[in-house]
Length: 111
Length: 148
Image (cartoon, rainbow over all chains, first blue to last red; front, side):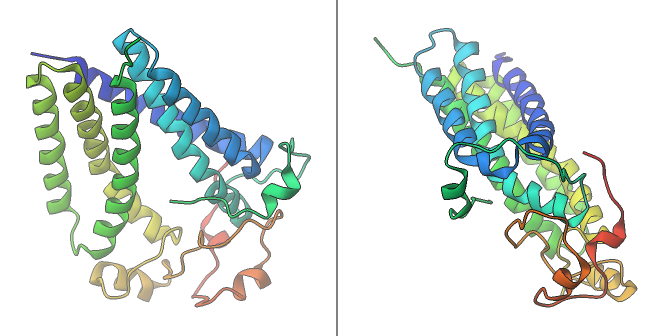
């Protein structure tokens, strides 16, 4: 019996569940324009996982990277949900990402 | 230096599991007359993938199957949650599905996909919503707010 897979699956669900929280909080405080940086951070985690010898560390880094990449595609939808009144809307100042004006012209991904 | 591919496999399994689950849950909930059979089928698929994960001696195969299986098992719970989103008007109802048609007739659901728009940077006013193509029976802000 190899319990590695089911155990990794359970931890993955927890990491994905945590993703719901940081997407909501992240959009509230920082806005959805950070999506390329979040996506890049996720890709960097997946890349770093290739160089980690311990199986669990490599696997968890890969899952966290995937969660970041998925979360980056959820930020735009979360911004719309807040504007629709389904979640709290932050009318105050949001910390803008580098090149914010350029990023406003990009179409944010939503899967 | 050899590369450890388990992280990449885990990442692909997690991303594809979440993405495919996201798409399949919306599609199946939208087209199914009843949710029981697809929930049972998803539970069986998820359980089967977990059995495969337990029986595999390879960490990569076991990890990939374990992650995919858990995401499919999570989708069992997501199907009724999606139905509640449709009933609340947060996800588009399918008029050709009798289960959704009843909700549309009651005026609680909508066939509009409210998320198919770009953020504008301010809370949406009702006149902005009424300008939406296929503006339905009610606006989404009438179905309650959730705190972040």
